[in-house]
View 1 (spheres, rainbow, N blue to C red):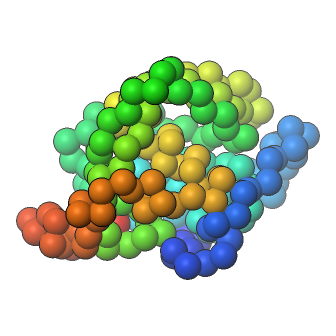
View 2 (view 1 turned 135 degrees about the vertical axis):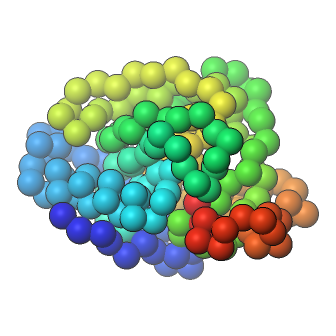
Length: 181
């Protein structure tokens, strides 16, 4: 297991649709090692989440969750989750605007509209079904990470570019080491 390099905006792989993981491969050493690398890389970068394409692997796997995240100090904890082949279903068309950053878009943040309440489904690292209804920041994190699986980065969702800028300018009191996702 190892901490991997995180690809940055401009890398072509970040704009591609990731491949689903065949159910029979979930328990394989290859997929289990990838999951561990994703978790270790996310923690090493103090991220709220990470998707396989961000470390150069075109597979539909995301990891997310934290007890406390220094980049989002006012947010409630999100349970650590490994989500394979996710499906997101919005409850309705209600969206809320919130600040986002990304480990693949370092040093920048923007306000991004996201569905307020979603249902997400997929498989965990053991191939067991995950089926959750969430809202607020938890829903935002899931949508952000799953966007990586369809070749979207959060700047592609920004509607008001007057809110898009460098973290150090938008949040001058934030520790410089906390300026990515």
